[in-house]
Amino acid sequence: MINFADYQTDEVLLINPPLIFKEGFRRPSVSIPLGFLYVATSLKKYTDKKVVLRDYIGHSKVKLDDRKNLGNVSEQDHYIGLSYNEIKKDLSDITIPKVVGISCSFLSHSFETIQTLVNIIKEISPQSKIILGGCGLIEEMHTLFNGVDVYFFGEGEERLPHLLNGQFVDGIRDSAGHSPVDGQTPPYLKGDILTKHSVLDYSLVDIEKYVYLNEQGAHSRFSRTPRSVSFITTRGCPYTCNYCMIHTVHGRSWRLYSTESIFQNLEALKNKYGVEHIHIEDDQFALKVPRFLEIIKKIQDLGMTWDPSNGLYVQHLKEEDINLMAKYGASTIKIAPETGSQRVIDDIIKGKPITIKKMRDIAKWSYNAGLFVTGFLIIGFPQETEEDIKLTLDFAKDLTEKYNVRWTVSIARPFPGTDLRDYCEKNDLLTDASVIEVLGATNLYNIKHKTFTLEYLQSVAKEIESTWIDAGALTEGASLVEL
Image (tube, rainbow, N blue to C red; front, side, top):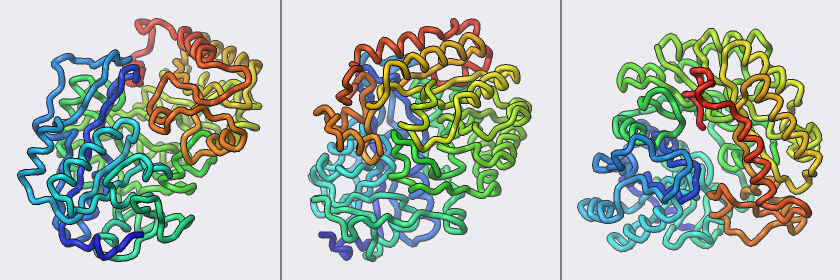
């Protein structure tokens, strides 16, 4: 069990590890490490701890190939970050503190690099306690790593300082997976506490290095400019889609940053760092329409552009809202019907209160307003039928033909902590694929479906995606979307 006194310290080392993108992944992609940055900012602002930061992706010595684009579909592994030898030398040149925190935002891309970092730290400073935290953590973490002392689940801005003071903290597990309060959900930041931690100190990362990485093709999202960063205005999502695991990090509530704090961050990015494009990473950016429109108007007023990384929830949007989006500088809109079958939405996905009819309306209004429309589809749910697949095919092709919608098709994967995973486990529908394979693979189907095979689903995805209109005929906004 955890002895909290072992973590009391006046100094902490925080590390953002390198990433590895395996062959066959759509493409390497990085952006400023928001989770790392939020925790580092809060420790610097609100504690008297000495905080030593090591961003091994945005490190000054990191170099990539001279090619301007690493590729849309990678044909080789790509390592993004400082080399292991350089990291070992760097850590050997400092006194590693009693406590080291390592960020895990993308488990599938950092599994190897985190374990290597842990090994290096334990070799140099075996007495140091290693904490692993971030949005990439899953229930089975303790079975994946050796040498990690504590797995820190949930948000860390308020709770990590408590742990560094030797105080009791919930929502954590030791190296054997034991928790001091099994089943208790850690509290999430909200209200004034969320506002307290909302304004970031961007000087804690090297934004120019991330601009360089963007220039070399390792960009988080496609945009017209490499001077692009990821950004959030909310945390969490109120919906309960069966495939989504966001609630394992941010709970099932939807919490909003104040527009004042958002504007402060945007102004700093524009005026201090010359950022030109914002990738909105919210799971739910447009739920409150007046707030949504106010924020994108501010982005436009600052002379920046933006795009959504996730599908916007659009069931409540009116045609006039879409027109205002275009007026306030939007070039693209992303929708996420996930399927062309209303039955799949209502009876399988369940937690997404949308209709196929509204998705058609949104595509039409957006096209008419001059917005480039992209959409997300998921195929291969265990209860899905060939008739559902046909409806999805017809729906996707129809919207592409009429409104130039460009689709990204994913094969259903039962991620840890999701209702889809629970259903598959209960009905013995999981293959023996490892958790890391499930999280990171793009060519895996680990559901034992009575009809569907990987090859069949891949052929469906190819048929849908092949309906895309030639890139030369796309609107200018196409350069802003992930292809």
